[in-house]
Length: 154
Figure 1 (tube, one colour):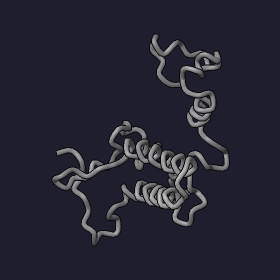
Figure 2 (cartoon, one colour):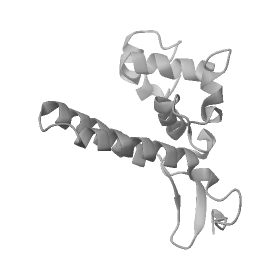
Figure 3 (tube, one colour):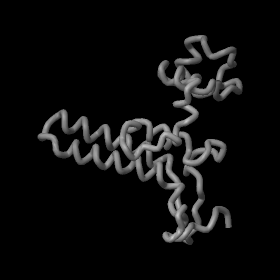
Figure 4 (cartoon, rainbow, N blue to C red):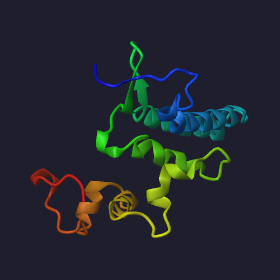
């Protein structure tokens, strides 16, 4: 059986792999409550749609426990090399980094004094340009070959 036996609730480390995920879902629940409290209309619809969209993105990057009680201690869709909690979930936590329950340790690599790592800077550049295709088309892909010819990331 892959995975590890899930800790009992009396263990001080119980649920460690879910803390970032729980934080994100709690904040999204708060935002949904605020969105649905708005008066009917386009502003309410937009606010609800925003939270629903974030929830759909977040749920694709979440850890899980199998029906037989084994924690997979990894993201459902990310490679194990992404760390745990996965980088995607940790980046979602940054949306609320001024919240009192936010743990700065979730994003030490991104928020360090020396700034984001080279890889994170590359990903921020790609995001600012609207994705890998636009980054490649901008001819600033650091000497990459076309993704169709083998390169996948910078």
